[in-house]
Length: 318
Image (cartoon, rainbow, N blue to C red; front, side):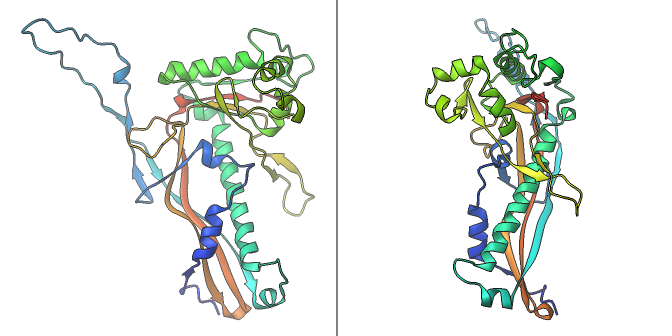
């Protein structure tokens, strides 16, 4: 018999789930969460009237030049969806668990891991899709000798060199929003290629030469914060042997992410609308002599300004 109607929000497990983090995941950094009161609603996109230069000279005793300084360009909508996974902790599992095993926390941790990986995959799929940038045209697809790990790649090329590509991406964003982007996403598989590039190594040498010893990219490069996601997922069909695939593939993303996206009138690349933060619920399943543990959140990820981002698709061949 299930007591699904008698649900208890376990605060200790909820706090544990909220604090849980995985350094290989960057979804919360590139598409930060903002709390919303409703599961679905509209938000406002302002026009770019303040980019215009206007006549502001006023002659003596003349009227001030009245202008339309702002207007709402569009009102897109969001619709949060519940994301939830559950598992059982049996009375026998709990009774037979030896320290340091803690079945309730183990289940909460694994479910949280799976929800976070699913979210990372959703975000990567959105941001690494050229269709996301259909209006702005802020993307380029590389192939053959233009890819950074191709044997014929010319790292000294004025057009194809890694820094040239990054500069072009930065300029495309700046030209669209009037601000320099502040983040570059370089997935782990791409980072291993980038760090070996002669021009990049020369640049790193003057940034922090210890990085040449331990093999990492610096936390900032080209005046951009470097995010290196390393998550993998099993791309095999169920029942088939495990096949690891990189969540972010061989793509690179340059973006402007607002330092505090919770303020009104924020210009930023993407947001996660959140009507219910992650929480852990428990209820009794008497017929199974078990307690059900459920981790859930109600969220949706949205690109709110594609002009704040630039995609380098297939920077390396995978």
